[in-house]
Image 1 (spheres, rainbow, N blue to C red):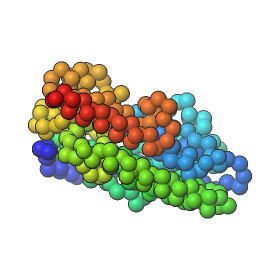
Image 2 (image 1 turned 45 degrees about the horizontal axis):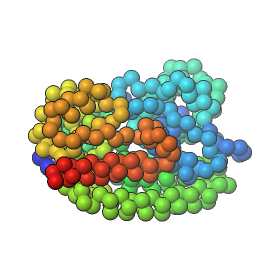
Image 3 (image 1 turned 30 degrees about the vertical axis):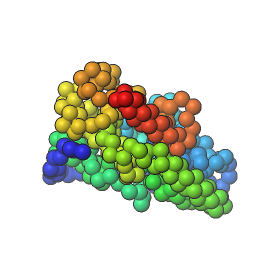
Image 4 (image 1 turned 180 degrees about the vertical axis):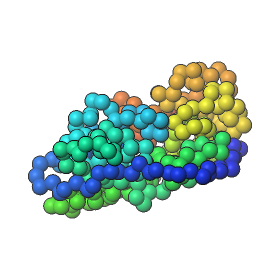
Length: 315
């Protein structure tokens, strides 16, 4: 694939990392744990690991790299009562959470005890491609690599174990149960990964342009090749700029998200000359989806169908 390459230069900046301002929470002694989660797909893993000992809710909707990220207003009261926050280690998340909870420096001391913070990114494999692959700009918050590491399902077991360890700190008497649930999750997911690889094997070498962040991570499974073009993190370049890169990359499929502005999808369908498919990048946009694997089932089915349609059209 003719990927667009840009040498990425790092500006000299003073980075004030918006790391969690809350201290670790105290171990819970009884009852269910109230767990705030930054991503719906990771929330599904929390449910798989925590089972009936946790009540969960998602903090954000939409892209986490956008400027002005804010905790959804409908869950702010629940956040104030949370026993734990499960996050991806991405500073944009922690800044928004601390702001919503009034725990930024200089804020009055809150009455509620602080929750535990469980960083699920520890040990996860990263795609070392910062937010822009087209314009040579690297945002300081993205220097660790692409923040959407959970879109590589091979990171699922790592995420599950991080969750089990974190919940086990809060519920020590259930630690063994959490670790067993994480192991069961790993075994099931590995079977799913083998199934997806088999289904996608005939598509090896297919080049896909994604208008949505993060799908480069799925390339770690092998076979498929994803390309993206991002300018300022969280902002799509114009349809004309993206169309130019689609042509340069000589892609076989263009993939948009349900949240991709319609003018982009229309431009791709009318002017790119390649099939355009809509694939959700989170289970929150897949009707009836409850599990982490449902995200990749949906992706695999869409790609296999698109490849089949292309083959049929040629015949």
